[in-house]
Length: 546
Image (cartoon, rainbow, N blue to C red; front, side, top):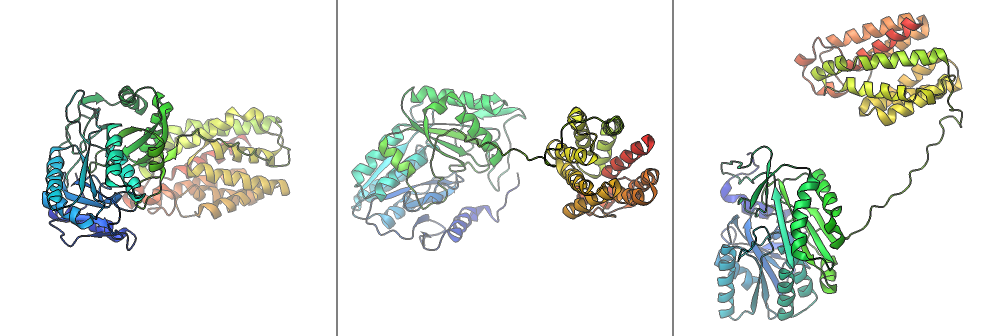
């Protein structure tokens, strides 16, 4: 796997400095113990309230330093990637931020974190600091285990403890609220890949169609491997297990966490699946989807639930300074607003009418374009993305399917209708360009019944918006000379000009518009532009029927 870093030895400190440099001035700071002891703390902290301290190994960004700020953590202690910070580092953080009201340590239930934070707490107490510690063990992946892992649900505790501390509560109350919250959290994760540690060789233990359910946040194997399934089925498995733990009553907050590498598009699909599942009825507040407790670049996500009461709801809704915490959203239905009705293109004069000649002409053109689908796709696969034939055929099929609704006796209204159909059915830039062409031609035709002049007006608008001109290796190379010939010499000359224009694109070794503009000269040479070929074929059919 490839990674962006300089040296493995400095990746964590450089990342933390990146966070500090991109945070608002005066909000965050680090102790001068860098790089051996890595502590990020609130720059505005005055020790007048209970300090909330958390941390652990790096690789979980934005956790933990990303949640330092008013309303959440007072300080975060970072170890190296997936390695607990030392006792000295934790103790240094306690000394730096703890005042007379004391400090609460929020610790995920991993042996290294428990021991290092625990020993630091004992040493701090020996020095006279008032320190309490809450351990979060929210992972339900392994049934019956004595020491469940602490995973993304820990963020609920950060938020709730930070809220009460910010409100001025004493250490006893803050610790009690945090401990009660930790007891009521359940989490479960799944991934389609293992994570990759910068500077280390990576080997993915999963097959091409496998995922892991119930995995931790350090790349450790999941409890079980599962076959790749639609998201709705994966989510159903996870929510069933979570639901079995939380019971049937009470409102809950849901945290949807990206473990590092799931694209936003897919996280939206996951969120929709979760909030369409039976468990959604128990969800009142939603946090995410967002990367909050990651596992480097793991292609997975986790779901966490916490039972709500009035105090927790207020805590989770409260605004905080750290940008990494997404504002809580109350569960709601999708709002649907009726779309405005489309006005008639020509003041109602678009009712269906029949004209045998125009029907025959339009049918022949569309059927011929459909027959060219494979050939145009073949040409486009060499100079573009391989879908010109399918795009053109889709537009042609849509026109044929609605031909009985077209005002065929009225050429201007027919062009307007064709433009409307192509704008909604054809797709791609070609569909939009041809819709512009026919829409503008319709307007010109309605003002003056001159088909050649109207089509030239459409070409003018199409090239204005599309930006292509003759020589740019697009459909314009066939369309422009054809319409020029149509104006002065008639349809037979137009067909010849279109064919010549399409043929000329074979020699154009540089495209200046469209997908072909991304293709090298060697791949373009000798291959005609598929859009120009389609235009030439249209004129050929029309000329044959004239």
